[in-house]
Length: 174
Image (cartoon, rainbow, N blue to C red; front, top):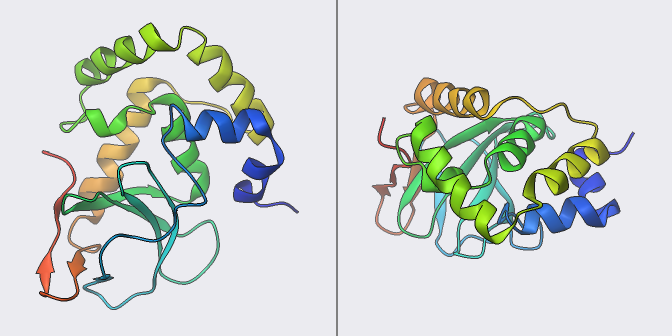
């Protein structure tokens, strides 16, 4: 059985959508800083974005593990429990980083900007979802899932800048 991360590489339409507008690249797994989880659990970078942010698997296991995102500005937070949840977020709201309060209003404003540049965004997204075998939730559902994941796990997933022993700031203003 193929993993979802492997499927990304098998389908150009998926990898192209995830690269842009998703700003998610499996070839960028190294974080710009030395970091660790306060709990001591395993932290494994597996993807990144063009601005130096990194997606990390937290703990032991496979694609079902919690996923943390850390930007290059010192903010981090849990964004998904497992790769399917992360991919739904990236497909439905690739502009999620432009929504610091995770409101639907912020998301609608960000999506309007993306649609000006990418009028076929939703068609491309839907084709990528079919290739991945994923059913997509609504924009409000994906933002609510992100809010729940982030708030429920905030104290359990604290990223530390190793050289100074300082905590990363929360990723969202909740």
